[in-house]
Amino acid sequence: MNEAANLQNFRDETRGWLAENCPAGAKGPGEIPWGSSKLEIADADTARWLELMAGKGWTVPTWPKEYGGAGLTKQEFMVLQEEIRRIGARAPLTGRGINYIGPTILEFGTPEQKAKWLARLARGEGGWCMGYSEPAAGSDLANVQLRATDQGDVYLLNGMKTWTSDGIYGDWIFCLVRTDREVPKHEGISLILVDMNQPGVRVRPISLISGSSPFCETSFEDATAEKDDVIGAVNSGWSVGKRLLQYERSIHAGVNTSGIQRQEREASLVDVVRQYHGAKQGGRISDASVRERLVRLEMESRSYQLTQRRVMAETQARAPSTATSILKVTGARLTKERTELHQQSFGVQGIGWEGPGFSSRELETTRTWLSSRAVSIYGGTSEIQLNIIAKRVLGLPD
Picture 1 (tube, rainbow, N blue to C red):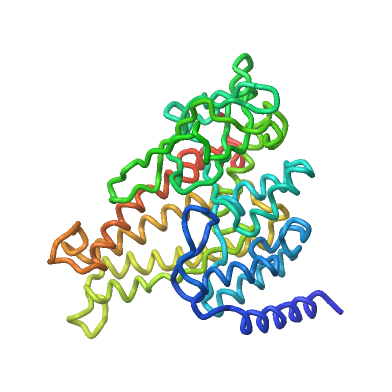
Picture 2 (cartoon, rainbow, N blue to C red):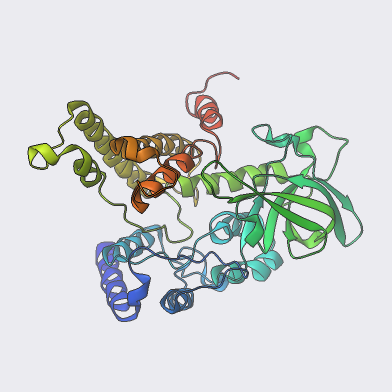
């Protein structure tokens, strides 16, 4: 049987299984678990969907079966994505466990580390945080100072991480730590896994202008980490950590091939704008400049989506390298433009913070717009991505 026929058989079997097994409550907007033991899954259908998909190996479809995956080819993975999207189902599991540290362990971990961690990650057992940035190590990430002191079987950690997303709900954190202070800064770093549920780890939320507090400061005061949980060689964490960043960027760029991508469908921006600019002309958007801006955004968004599909089809690695930086920069720009156009189309109704003069939708739009300002910062700033593109794609000098 040829490849096309095999792929069609897989599509037919996948479609049949999803029709029979996907709970109604797992379709449409709603909760997507990310593994935290501190956040109970509120909806029974969501919990059942995670259980069923983990049993099929479809929370991490391309991972080997022995590590909780399904061993799907890239083509089969894309078919699975299409079939899940077709029925409007949500991803069964997301988060830094299956999307960041999982692929990194799969690539750099020892057989013992893979056996210890990967199947747990695939089942969504434990919520993961990212310990990279520090008060003096943001864009200059190699300047990390969180000290890991060798104490025999464990490392003793002292220092701080900042901008720890979801820190108050994390069970584990993967950290870049300083294991050697006597060598050049890029050479004395290790990547290590740390249990956050211990007395030596303290987490403090950081309030943002949007009103939410997704980020935290994380302090380590004689916290411990097992030496067996260093991923890659000791003092080789810079290379391992950079590879993890490629996996992170692949998520933001929409070309991840580890977990199922998020499937939420946004409301049509055209319909939103028409409500505020089309009343006098039978639904036609009256402002020519708004029409032009909206058409340009929709054309660029379609081009971006086609580029995502091409990159996924062409890449031979689990995480594309320079393509992730290109897509990350473009995706951040389009996201900011979309949310800004959405907010501005409301006029003065798009700048409300609270009060009876604004609908819940308008207030949510204001907060979404404020939050969107950060998309060109988190996951690697646009400036850093442009430097990567300049050096690695265009070959420009430092």
